Image (cartoon, rainbow, N blue to C red):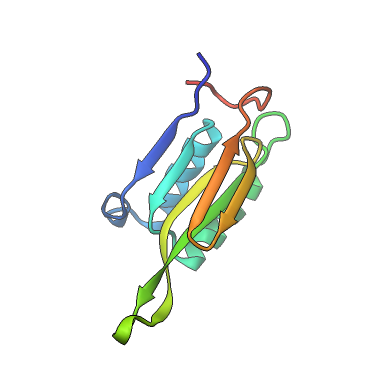
Length: 122
């Protein structure tokens, strides 16, 4: 049976880890072929470190890198006027699996390519 494993991590679960622990956990899960869905997101410096770490881990035959997609939501201010964007959730996965992503302001749709991606199947 072919399938895609998705790991859902709450912001509370991540809050007890250091930045490097978060990054290591995410990279290991994604290298295993999993999609990681995070409630909220990473701080900008954590996301930059995640990308940098991933670039060092790239192996053309086994690990092509990652894709990161963030779904934001409006934070409402006084009188219901949009104040700013807040991260609702972040999806991180192997670049060779995450295909055909359709992202709009409040909608994210993705087709995962499992056929010949080389990703682990669960």
